[in-house]
Length: 206
Image (cartoon, rainbow, N blue to C red; front, side, top):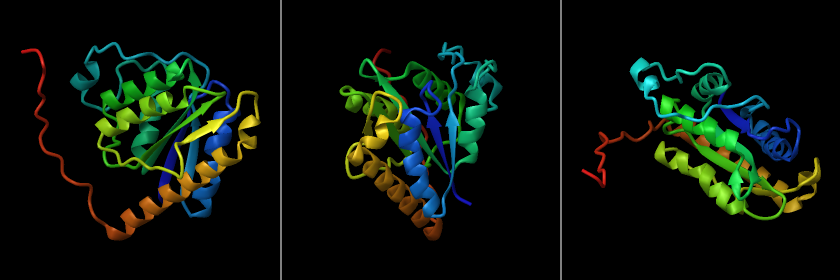
């Protein structure tokens, strides 16, 4: 069965980010799509130190195995699509989410060609900047971006307030329908992911 992995990047396990992702999972499940919401937890998540050891090992994992990064890589590899949800802190996604995604993608998580979406949850402002930041790694990994009727933003500060954002919840449901539509059409068509040309890096300093 087709499966979507949704990462809850909030330190609050059942807070507003969870509510937003849960609204999407309900729609996906109704469409016959399996889902898993994976919580990032409250333990520290290392940032990438650019040591390059992951590439030396060539096993698609980070050399540091003392946090959730490698277990999340395994979940990403097993999923057919990815959604990353995060609360907005100072106009940016929560730092632990960025650390996780950067390390997982650099280490070699198998995400190329998989549909992806980002969800930003905030009190009032900064959500569009955070949403853009969350989406940029998807573009570097050749992942088709899934959109909705509006930017994938849900508003709420106190626990449970996200459920009161009528338009935000509607946006999550439409996002779920669009994700299901894309996954089903890809499955029916059977078309493989487009081949990538060999990377030709062009550094500005030579």
